[in-house]
Image (cartoon, rainbow, N blue to C red; front, top):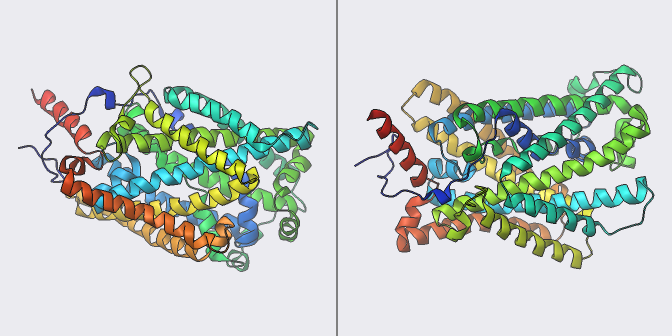
Length: 501
């Protein structure tokens, strides 16, 4: 009887090759894909001004540094666990390994809902931004936002059906343009000395601890969302044991530097003594007007266009991640098995992608029938996603901590990684408590909507727990497969046996 080092039950079956996703993602493709999912231009133009206004004001850059360090601590544990559990499935797999199959399946259900909400929010943002570009910048007709959103939907649905290598190439191009424009803006502000000379007020204690630290912390954690996506593309990455750790650390450190510097630059562009009043007057256009002031009309138009490409990159990346969660649960039989079939030619999760596209189309039709604007849809859905993602981080950090403390293969390394993950768990749990208390601020939802949405989120996790319990009694083979265990471990055992032979 064969068992793995973690003591799991023996492997009794293998997966057909149709359940294997394949790709050729290298280090740079993976980094650019994940950072593109983080949507830097969206964060810079829309997220950072709101974080400054509602959080701790001019002390925001320090908040980003602290939250970046927390993300880095979590990444240490995430990478260490990934090396010990080389399976696809993302948080679904890791929570299963650390906290059990019931909570693991609940995490899988929540991840699908979270990235579905993220995907929808991107359509609202992209549609609204394109409407504004055509109407306000180019002087064209006032075309409804959903017309553009539907156009993007068709493109994303087609690309989602194909091998992800094509999407990754597009994401590389879009991200390169975004980062280039942000660097040009940063250089321009520093070269011109900002509003009244480059000042370091952001690092003074009275500014760091000003405003609402709770809200600041929630927003700070939110801007690092996406770095965990490195593990969901595991099956499509070249040499994942080396590529994924390098890419994960690169993404976290890169985002930490980019957002800290860009927020510090934005504050100096207006001046630490003026920026809060500017944001209070018009938080929506403050960043784009700053780009216009320091880079000219060409930079302003470019920023408007890059906001759209950044939103499109978010559509593409979030679609890919959500489809892969559906695929992984389909492979395990926790969801209908047809979702777990890979395309024979493109090696893509084509069935899962089609189902996701249908679900997105239904939701977009619902938003249109409600006469909701693209910007409003983005604001609400992005906030709801941020809250769900924070729950995923809390569950994953706890699972990683527990798993690594129990690992005896390399006790010293595992313990160090577990401590790092445990520290991040404490901070992330604190952020979740603060986010729950400030759910209205985070999402804009009011009245009965707030408790209803929160209830749906936690009932989704409970639904996974209940489903796993039912599978254990009525479909034990399905229960055994939860967490993408058998397929990967079977192949690993075959490889080891072949090497020994």
